[in-house]
Length: 492
Ligand code: FRU
Image 1 (cartoon, helix red, strand yellow):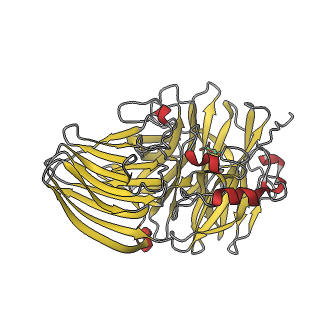
Image 2: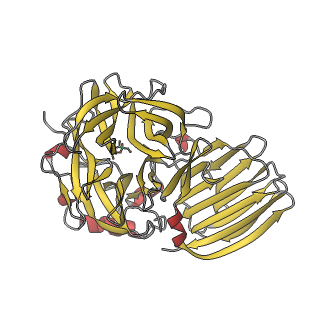
C-alpha cells in the first residue's frame, strides 16, 4: 500500500539550509526554558524512551519532532549524564529513514543484553491520515556509545490478528531466563489492551496473547499507551497510560491519564492479580512515564511533563515541553509513592531557612525566585485553608491550597496572563489526610513546578508560563498556622 505523505513527515536530514540553526535561534532566548529539566533546544519533545543506567552513565532518550512545536516525524533525541543532574546533549540517536519506520521512531524502552544496550522502539507506518500500521524494531548501543539499527529490522512486522494499527511502545524485561515484551494495543473493537511477546534471545519474538489485567476499564478506553513493568519491594508493578478515561471525582481530569497497578504478574497464564490500582499523578502535565533501574538498583522514573492536544504558550517560540525531574519510586502502605531522586541534592547552591507563624488570616512572602527547591513543614494547623503561591506577582500565581475541612489539596493555575489548557479545567485536586502537619517539597524551574506532598503520597506536575516579574513565593492561611521552610537556589 502506498505510504502517506505530509510535510511534517521529514527528518532532520531533509532540513533546508540553515533551517535548524534558525529554529535554534528563534527558541534560544525564551525565558521559559527550564534550567535543570531536560527540554528541547527547539521543536517538540514528548515521551522519555530507552531509559538506562548503562556502562556507568545515565541515558535518557526522548521523542522529538525538530521542525515545530507540533507532533510530526518523531526522532529519538539523546542526553547522558554521570550523576543524573548534569546532562550532556548528544547527537540525535534515531533518525527514522528506513522503510520500517517511515513515519517516525516511536516510543520504546531499553534493556542491557550481553553488555550492550538493546533499544526497542516502534516504527510508525502511515498509509493515510488515519490508516496505520506498526513495526517493532531494535537499535543497539555499544559501550563506546555507538548506536546501530539492527540489520534485520523489523523484529516484529505489523500487528497481530485482532488488533488495529495502534500497537506500540515496547517494554522488554527478563524473567526466569526468558525475555518478555509488553506492547500497548488497540483491539479491533476499538478498546485498549496490553499484549505480550516472548523470546529466548531478545531478538526472535513469538506472540503470546493479551495480558488479562483484571481491571474493568470503561469501554471508552480505546488505547493503552506506554506500558511499563517492574518489580519493587516484592510486588509487581505496571504503569500504563490509558486513553479515553473520563473524569471521576478527583481522578482522570487530563485528556490522557496515567495509572499504576500493584499485584502479581503470572506470565504462564498472562494474568495480573491486582491488589491495588489508581491514578499515578494528580497534576496537569504528566504522561507516558517510563521507569528504569538506577545505580543502586533503585526504581527511577521520568515522565513527559506535557499533554497532547493542548496548545502551550511556548509553541509560538517553536519549542514545547520538557521531561519531569527524575523521581524515585517506593511502595508505602500499599501505595506507590514518588520522591525526587536523591541525586538532585547536588543541584543545591545557597540555602535560606526560616520559620513563619501566621497568627491570623494573611500571607507572607518567603522568597523570590524562578528556579529553586523548597521544603516546607506546616505545623500547628488551625486554619481551614492554607497553602502556597508560586510564581506569584500581583496578577499571577500558581496556588497550592490545602482544605482541612474537605481533607483535600488542590493546585490552581488559572491566574496567569498566559493561562492555557482551560478547556480541561484550571484546577487539579486530590484527597489528602490533613491533621496538624503537612510536608511539601517543590521543584520549580522557570515554567514548571513539581509538588511532592507528604513524601510523595500526592504529586502534582504543572507547567505555567509566568511573566518575568512573577517570582514570588508566598505562604498563606485563613487562620493560625506555623511553617518551617528551607529554600535552595538551584544550579545551572
Ligand atoms: C505517547 C505516544 C506513544 C507513541 C509516541 C509518539 O505519548 O503517543 O504511544 O509511541 O507518543 O510520539
